[in-house]
Amino acid sequence: MKDTTQFMYSLSSLRNDRWIMDNILERCTLCPRRCGADRLNGKYGFCGAGSEVRIAGASLHMWEEPCISGKEGSGTVFFSNCTLKCVFCQNYDVSTNSLGYNVSVDELSQAFLDLQGKKANNINLVTPTHYVPQIIEAIETAREKGLVIPIVYNTSGYENVETIKMLDGYIDIYMPDLKYYDNKFAAKFSGAADYSDVAMAAIDAMYRQVGKPVFDSRGMMKRGVLIRHLMLPGLLRDSIHIIDYISKTYGNNVYFSLMSQYTPLRHIEGSEALNHKLDFKYYNFAVDRCIENGLENVYVQNEEAASESFIPQFYGNKM
Image 1 (cartoon, rainbow, N blue to C red):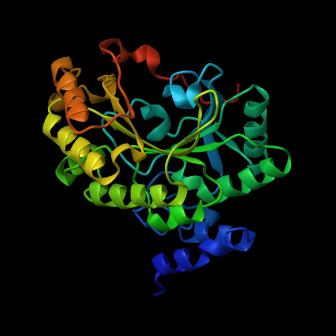
Image 2 (image 1 turned 120 degrees about the horizontal axis):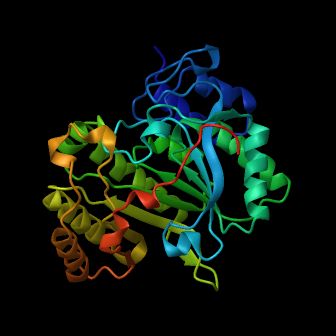
């Protein structure tokens, strides 16, 4: 049997070839699941995605970090389906129930241009992993038609290094989660027992690709890595390990967003460990750890951030 990992890596320099893009989808190994689904011929990957791009909406989003949204908003495209199975996912209907509508590559490309026309600060690709070949083609088409704003890759962090290498030259800003330090929590809450090792390797590849943060005169990020960590109830020690890891590994060469906005939703009522909000005193403890470690490029939230009002609304059809 052919080693598909090496196959993807060797093809990374040939990503513009349409046949190669199709070949990847014919035995999909885009994400760390490497499920090998023949998505071109009616099969669906572990993520739930088939051959067509499926999105839940494309609009200006005002609630990302200040260097991403700014005053004008981030041009956010929410992709349906996901390579993780987080029991607490705030976009559960989109990630797990596949809420959304199918778009062609040309329609996706036009969505990028429309968002630029609305003065978006960037194109923000949310949960894009399983559509990377189509996204690359859409970016190329849009750039030929005048797309110039930065592209943000907004990901769970659960990425193959080979897939990140394919994106070299297409992505300006990587915005990965680093959800867990201890894989036992990743297995329990996200169905990915290898998450921590995989995410750390992927983030390293992202950093090596785009380097230190670069900003324009308005303070908007043009290039760089912004790592997000959502604190979960009962996992303070794990969060502290993540803060220490980021401090030791990257220092102030990346931006870090420490999020307190965890909101228990109806679909996790059966999970005793996660059916309540984060105790804010633990969040403050984690903020203090960032300060102790000398981290300066840190975004923090207040207690009011843990609210369903900050969760985007999706309707499952074109708007």
